[in-house]
Amino acid sequence: MCIIARAMRDRGHEPVFMRCFEGFSRCSVMDMHGHKHVGDATVKKQGCYQCVHQSLQLLGRYGLEAIDLKALLSPEVVLAAKSAWTIPSETLMSFEKDGVALGKMAAVNVALHFKLSDLNCPSAEVELAWRQNLESCLKTYFAVSTVLKRLDVRALVHFNDYSMPLAARMAAKKRGLNAISLTQPGHKGVDRTRVMLQPDIWGITKLFQRDHWPQWRDLALPTERVKEIADDLFVRMRGKGAHNYSPGKIHDESGVKDRLGLSKGKKTVVAFTSSLDEFTAYRMTYEAVGVPVPPVRMAFHDQIEWLTRLVLHFEGREDAELVVRIHPREGANRRDGVNSHHLGLLRERFSRKYRNCRFVWPETPVSSYDLMEIADLGLVSWSSTALEMARFGVPVLSSTLDVVSYTSEDFLEFVDTPEGHIERISERLSRPTASLDAVIGAFRCYNLLGLGTTISLADVVPHSDYYELPDYRTPGEATTIEAIIMKGANVLDINRERLKAAQEPGSAREEAVVLRTQLRRVIHYFHTGEERSQPPTIQTALLGPGEIEKASFASALDSAVLAVAGGRTRYFFDGREYARFSPLCARLAPLCTEVLTADVKMDLLA
Image (cartoon, rainbow, N blue to C red; front, side, top):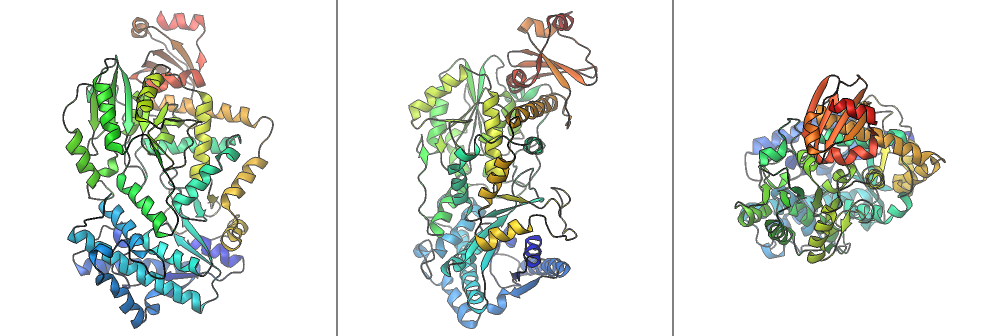
């Protein structure tokens, strides 16, 4: 935010930060540090001191101005905000001020913090947290409204869609001002060389992006963008990043099938669930800003019905097994120490042993990327895992559409009835091959959804993991930043026009060449655990079950040989041999490797 503010000052504007010190009973920083809603006041005070010290340092270094929010909280405002503590419990959700749904706004933070999908009967602790957040939302709304009256404010920029920033946003909207949601993309963990400047809240922006997919679908990605999108997969496989809850991938030869007691003679379908509280918060955010909640197409009433039908189906099959990956966020983890309410319902329903089904619970040390490797088919509700699997060439079938902005026809499928969903599983298992066009579509869609509303600050921020405030220089995108914030220019349109202007007659062909190289990176990494920017040339031999046991080959340093028999692989590189059960690599091999000549195949089996 400091970089954006300085860039605006360089363009002739007067950016002003709003900060506080001990002005609020609850804020996002307290949530970030896991402060209890009831507890030691000293801990909270220390957090406030640390926060204001940080802001003084950063703003001072860049010479930026700030207004103390607490100074704007007149006795009348403080008294009005105290109404959060006197309204009846049953009216918390419906509480409004000036027609702004502040009760629902406060509920967004509460649902996410406690991982609740139902706030109808809140516990005493939840109600306390709700009232604290509501008081903070009221104070924010009043304070920002006061500033907007006193100063000639032209636009408001808020960080992310937490409850308090949403209250600030609605105060600006009440005065007809442009309001921009600023955050950083969950790309490569968190990419600090990029900033997202979204014209609306996250959900509305994502659906806007979905509607623009037809204008992006046929635009080939440049070489560096393909590499960058592949880099994101490698960061995720290492288990890195604030948005990644899965443990890192394991490269042991025994594989996850052995660890879970699965049969290598049967097909494997992996279902990835989603956090229900995040879906609840997503819908409440729409209601909080006064926008109708968009309809969601669902094949099943909820995820429990979906999983129940899946278990019933696979328990009756002899040729396939089901693995259900319960979203790791549902359990206590390194980011938060709370189990979700939804997790309790899932355990109550699915904790028994099954013949053909395995449930991987949040605390189970199994990587989602090991599960993707063995999947003949991936199933999702609305998980972003769909786009990860599709980039790996895994066929994907979704039970829900429109929660996120995926399009079903390009790299995943959706059937809107329970019967159709189950039938499509059998159909997809009968045609397990991958399509390069589908992988290209997934890369292009990730570019739209993950990077389409971003502006690069790479000429200011040294690298994606840079956590300090860098030495300032005017960003090359300063004019673009000004146009977005002050003139309402849409960053999505700007980036599409840039991508369109970069198209040349050979762009699609070059994109495919670079993508094949990135898929070879995946094959090499899955077998060796070695991440290479430039993978070796790989030749592939399709062998029978008996032949793969005999395979042996001494490859040159910059080349490798991959032997494939069904889902089993043996990889020969640099004098070493790696054996895996990897349907993912077997599926990718025809898309990105050379076919062994007859002579080399004979050497392989000699």
